[in-house]
Structure formats: C-alpha cells, structure tokens
Image: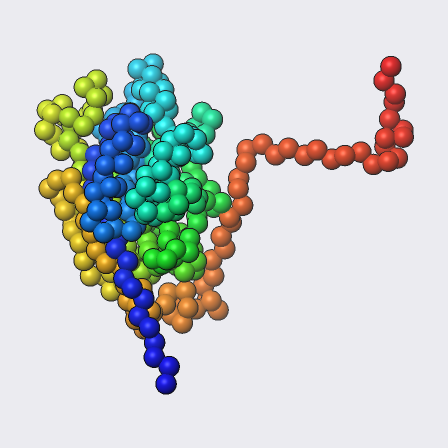
Length: 330
C-alpha cells in the first residue's frame, strides 16, 4: 500500500518595520539587517511591507489641491523620484544579494522608477539572488494616484517555489474581487499582502482572503512614527517625533482563516509562522473558488495580461518590388 508523504513545513516571516524614508541605501541597509534577523529565526521566506524602499509618504499632500500643484510639492516629488528603484539596477542587485546571503525567498515592497513615472511595486528574489519578477500595483488608492502610475496585467506573476506557489497583491488591490479570482486561478498558495492599511478591518479582510482562496496570507505593514521621516517632511498627521504614523497590524493567516501570527499594533517586529501546504489541500476539500465551487456556465472572467505601452513601434521592411521602385538617392 502506497503511503503518502507529508512535505516538510516551511518557515515564513513578515517584517513589520519603518522605512528610512527617501533614503534608498538606508532602506536597503536596514532590510539587510532585518532579513538576517528573520533568517536566524529560521525563516526561508521573508516579506517586507508596501513601499519599504524608499518609503510610503503618509501624511503628505505633495502640494496638490484640485486644479493646482505647488513648486514645493513638485520638489517633494523630485525627492521621492530620486530615492526610487530602477528595475533592474544597482538596488535590485543589492536586494538580490540579501536574499542570496541569507538563502531566503525575499518579497520586497519598493517604489519603482521607470522614466518619469513611479510605481508601487513588489519584487521577488530567489535564494540564489535572482530577481524572479515583479508586480506593479494595478490601482493606486485615493491620493496615491498623484504620485504613482497604474500597473497592467503583464505583472501579476505567481511563482513555483519549494514553499508553495507564491504571489503578491498590494494593499487595497486585495479588495478587487476579479483580481483575487485571477490569482486563485493561477493556483496561488502563499498570498503576500504588503499594505499601508492599519485599520482593524484589514485583519478581517486578510482572514476572508485566506478562507476564499484556501491559501496562506502573509500581510505586512510598516510600524512608523514621525521621527522615522525627515524633519522637513511636510506631514499633515502631526510633527511630534513620537506621533504614530502607521501602527502596523501585520499578521499571518492559514487557509482556514485562523490567525497564526500577530496581529501586532505596538512596535517594529518580525512575525514567524510555519507554512504547511497540506492545509491548502485540506481546505480545497469543500471549497475551491475556481474549481468545484465555481459556476463557469454562469460566471466567467477575462484577464488581459498584455503589456500596455503608450507608444508602439512598427518597422516593416520593404518588399523586393518596393526596393526596386524606390528612388535612388544621389
């Protein structure tokens, strides 16, 4: 009689910590220390918050009101742009080295710079230090649209790893039912949710995603205070150095919606929990949202994963007859 083997559990960690805001190198140095701490705790997969490199500028208006922008706000955007990450580039090489040195899968929230536009982005690195891919946030929320561009369907990857099928959905993207459905259809088992939402309701949403997708959810937010931002940062949330700007709330949830680490609303911390893929299979027994519990005869979803470029270049070579009839330049 064949005896089923149980895969070894993996150890996952979410890092709840503040960025060194507007300081790309400072963020990467802090990430190196925190990733090493997580690895020493046994972590094989380490997730960092949304926009960890080089900051989520919570409380800033960027000098904007409807109909006008100030020069001070434009200069603040320039400062933010200068601290952002080219993908690929020197910063991604440094982050890959953190993954390689600690032999971890690393999931890192960054602000990506592409031309003059910034994107809220999640980068994935292998234990060999390879940049596996990225996810650009599809839908910036509220005033985020002032400073971040929109991602498209070409960066919604799910990766096979020894720990399970790994992907990421950022902050309020988690409230998009059709995006969730597309990720479930890709067989995601480890759902990373870097966020800037510290509301009590967020934890309940993460439990819902875990139950709906029968997957592990690793939700990761920053814990930051006013002193984590530059003194000249124009913050609408207060200027006392101890003012809490983001209170965290990171957590890890299993496929039955049970919280197995966190939430923590008090401090910078690293939360660690075991990932057992058997739990995913057990959960699918009575609910597979894109399998036996789906009704494709009633509901179907179309997903466009083509890259959307604003300029398309077409270079059609001339035919032989066109070449023969073309005027000769002298």
